[in-house]
Image (tube, rainbow, N blue to C red; front, side, top):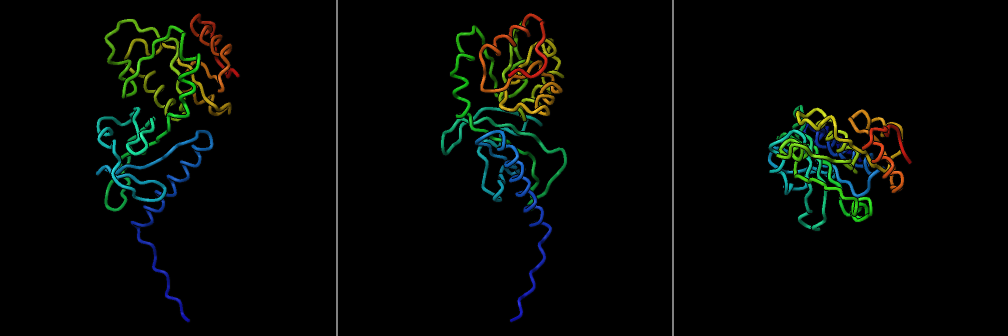
Amino acid sequence: MLMKPKEPESDCNQVKRRLCEFLKKREEELSSTHENLQFIAVNQEGYYYSDEGLQGVWYRSKDLQDADIKSFLTSDWITNENQMVFARKLQSQLVVDGSIITHFILIRSMEEMAPYFRSSAFSNQSTTYVVDSNGTKMFEDTAVEELRILAVILLLILASVLFVTKFRNSSHPLAKKIPILAMTANAFSEDVQNAFNAGMNAHIVKPVDMKVLIKTVWNLQTGAGAAGTLN
């Protein structure tokens, strides 16, 4: 019995398949160091693609319209799980199913971070944390003339590298002065170097040793320096 020749894949389907493969690959790469990650693509109509194809309307798509790079906290509308969202606008067009993909979105569950926020590292240290829904706004829009921050703890290395670079290059007078401490589960030399290249002053490996953290913050505060990986 003769088999009917398989029809060639259309250009549209090829692009969609390659997009899904890309999303799956990136999600697998990121999940090797961070749990509960999701990597999606959002088009100009607000619909999103996962590694399994078109899924539907992304519920926070309206928040992507006013910035090329944006990060914010949100809650999943189905599970009510707290999430950190990091979005980056594509610089070149990618057309899938006749619509333009505008953003790649990285979503991370905040639940696994909760123990760090409840630990002694984030309490009883007389430290104030300023939080805003959009990255550098919390520095550029502040009305306080002198804002003293001991360290900005950034737990997501992909987001933090881009965020710190943007902040260091901002016009705020404290942009070059505020010590920034990277705290990640990675001790690979490439990750550490990326942190320093982005403008961070020190790197600490998790789980956090409070003695190391206090010593590092003290060194940053006194100008003794804290370059290098501390573990």
